[in-house]
View (tube, helix red, strand yellow):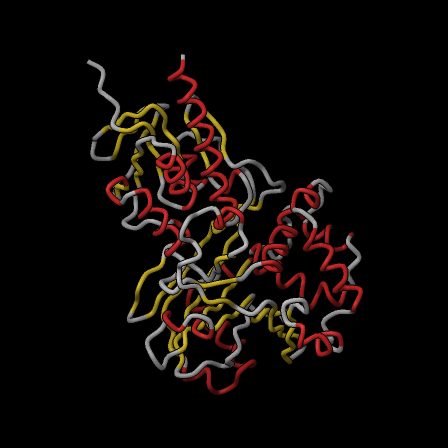
Length: 413
């Protein structure tokens, strides 16, 4: 006797893509079950508590201008606080600030007189942040090529655009599609780079709450899948009218998706506690100097809830070859470099932990839709679209819309 369906749709993976797909499906009135092999939801947006500190899975921000985030009801009620629009740049042994003159008009004269760029650079940047990612992508250029072609001075490229985009794209060589760089620049220009009060996991938590926690099964490892059935490692099986596999690219390959041949981008974030912050401004530090540090953020300058009262939480991120160093060597080289920045106070810092992500992002050469189909199984994720929270959410929404359309069509036949 054929087993009845356990749900209309089964989703494997409780990261942003899987949760957004389940969220969209449940909004359409379909029953869903989400299976997650780990003990927490969120995927790359998990947050955990350690000795009173909130530790995100690598330093990241929630961009409030993301179109996909804005579609989620309640996303504007996560207790977010924001970084200033700009950055503090470490260059040739000194710090210089660059902020968006349109967002901080009182700083206009200071910006025009700074050593970061020229007036023509700022005009070009304004134009670039008003161009759509699709328009930039249509040029068929990498980010490295696009920055050269757009006419920015070498000084502005070296002191702001390249270190900023390296930190966002996690790629020292800037191989990603220029359209993705344009999209990011636009999102930073028109919205806020924010941290939710309870950590970045607040967004996946919001989705899971709206789906219904009883529909999400944690610590459930899926061993095999077909178009309409999954089997767990304990032998239990579940059937549905459609299965969506929304796990990361390496796990998806083990479950039958096409092997992805794009370059994986590594990142590693070291977290430190300090009795006082090295500076008080809500700015991310970008480094143009040699050394392992790509970015440094005093997280508690923006969101004090990340640390116990009277303590500062500092997140230092390494990318490229520096991200692959052994922990002790990496920690030592980071401390050496940051001591040249802030002096003896670094001796008072306490090392908390390291979050190493050897396959943090996939470097896609083009922006695509975010899902594919193999033998009736739908595979979705930002590794099939473009690496970002928006890409992950869009992939989940689009694959869910496809399933809704298919199931409605089959019911009508």
